[in-house]
Image (tube, rainbow, N blue to C red; front, side, top):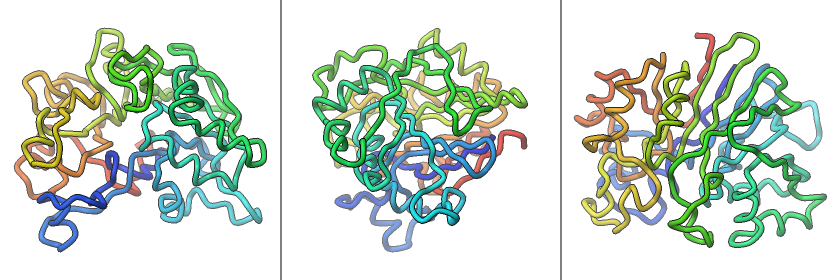
Length: 305
């Protein structure tokens, strides 16, 4: 099984288009040892030619241009993307569906809660119904494994996460279990597994079983500290407000990851304010010492290695 990181940043990307914080200014003027990043999404394949897109970033067109593996030169119009899975209905994970309208119809797997948000508060499904059949919804039932025909040897299981619904959702601050999921991804050919969780507000006992089971973790690294946005002067929301567990809190993700047996522990969905984007920072060095990796756009993960 191969996983291509198409985008590794949180909403807004890095540098964020309207942000002049230390990190964003530094990457723009070359004084920060960091790489620019687009908004979070990955692609998964069992043969290197046919792919399942997990989350459709607003930057999807740029990401596809930078990922020749997903190109399909033998067809006049088309790519290697044969299915799309959404882990939530956040703008940075589904707005890219609008950019994919010329390729409709698309087969889209998501929970009923996400589908409701995307037909009401942000009605992407409704809008795209005017383009060649639009988006064909396949419901996801949490904890029930499913597969898609384009990658038949890969099995997906949706794991409910304690997080939040988008600001436009009528369930904001009172999310239902299907509003945020992690994906447990299994290669049935060799038994290798990955847990993909770009949005994680709070680990519970149910999630811990899956975290302990996975060979590879591709997990939320949004903020270093819960009050990071306020500390950098760019906002007031805490990590918890946005549905993300900070890395460096007393019971944060760094401590959690240190307790897990996974072969690789990789962070994704990293906010532009996070000091770990600076490869020379003390925070980045701390992660390296603990064997925690920071994903980048274009990173390829081969679960057999």
